[in-house]
Length: 524
Image 1 (cartoon, one colour):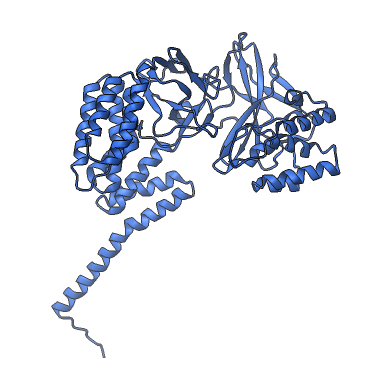
Image 2 (cartoon, rainbow, N blue to C red; image 1 turned 90 degrees about the vertical axis):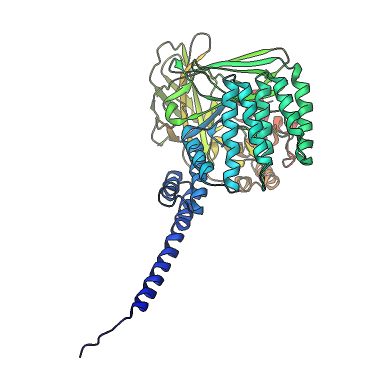
């Protein structure tokens, strides 16, 4: 006997309502779930996959709260992914700056600012303002630039829940200063001081005093950028002040000076205060993937600006050279290694460099020899004894940079540079994107107790372990080398009190006596 279930209309309506309600709850959770998935990919370094999730949220759930966060994060990825900083301190992944916005980043932020009004959207408005004002300043539209700031600042101060980005506003004012618009910078700062916020007032009063002092600065930093002999236009250029206590700043801070190259590739900082600076560029890797800077325009890590002097830089990106062997991770067993490369037209001689990669950082050292053919024979020990460029972070020196080429956990690679008869570098195989696979290996080496402690940043115990090893075996070249480097660290850091130049020289002298390798001669 069949059972017949009869539902009244009110039951059908109730079921439909419950179903619709559950569906709406699920639908409302989808963008948040997608955002978390995207954040996971972002955290793990898969930026393009993360960005694809953020884009889907924006497309399918444009009014959701998650869409605002998705737009901001997608914009940040587009501003930094596949972008590179190149300066006198080296090159590396680009950090974010509101001083310049690539077109795709700007599109995300404009959409975010237009669609939302919460705190993240208010913060992004400053990035857009910074970019717009700097463009006006570079174009000479000073009145429009000032009007934009005043209009924006007035609007923000009249909002019930105002958000003041002090550092961005100060950076914008400095953009007037470095272009030589002293009076405009002072007038704008005095106008801002007229508002009642005491904390801001004190900060801008300090800035006003700095501006008055810089009025007498007449130094210029100029230059021209080319890409394969064609003007490299709209290239972001920055000047970073470096007179700080601990080391150097790689990249830039909020108050760095910025400009862009014009349609002819020219750039100019008209009014640079005295001090020590680095100059650098930020660009898209797709534009320079097979290019290299000609003649190392940033030859020094920094340069000193002296009042009244002018400084000019030629920033020319040219095609990279090509290497032949060793390559593809070849393990070298012989004591002497043969390096081969393709010739470059116009080259008078060549030099070869050796690089290491660790923790996302890359560094090169030149062997210091000239080669007049397209091959070089190099002893393995000459590579192992080379110093790397010592680097450090907020915790102190990075231990891998002490171990350098003897560290079995780093990636070794090599490159070649070509020079003309006046010692100007014409090109190099060492580009910013890995092209030729020039990785090679010098074989496995046992990690000592001192190495283990060093890699844990236990510098004191590492030194003790190396000293004990030398007491046991006075000809232990590895322990002697590590002691020489640990005592030779140049930077004055409060969290590294172990520098002792006299001890370092004594260990380098001992190494020379044992190995008779001239690489140690210059050390003592």
